[in-house]
Length: 170
Image 1 (cartoon, one colour):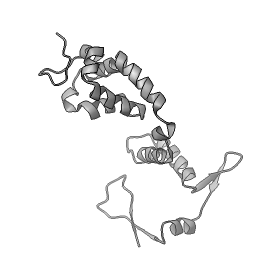
Image 2: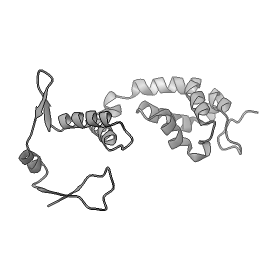
Image 3: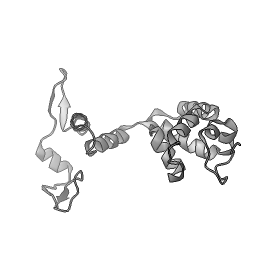
Image 4: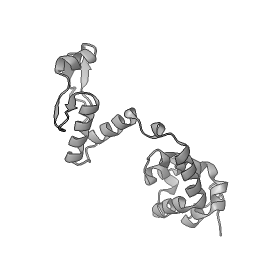
């Protein structure tokens, strides 16, 4: 029995998600997943963002594979990928956000976190990489405080959670 519409009473199977007919009846869902995947969101996160908890079961991974093997998905993914300018997928703000997420991820390896900190320091001109590949100070604390509008003290509240930035006071 085929289920061509996600609004039917039963949960769609991986076989349903592999069907191009199913994809055409559920185009909006497939297109939302495609948009997220083109922007680099992982398979599982894109799947959960679009389909929610109802489809988060022991068949989720099989559905994800079926979605990405679906002829409609493959064709549209390639079309959207080609049409999307690189600056919409990756830009300095996205790079900083991703690096900050890694720095503040308490489950990330320390070596990955340290590498991200080094990259952020270069992006923020806190350190500069010279011609030989060595890093050196790019700006001093006075430069940093001047850029922060004269804020000179950093206060850490006891209630702050690990991974949060300390509060800067004036």
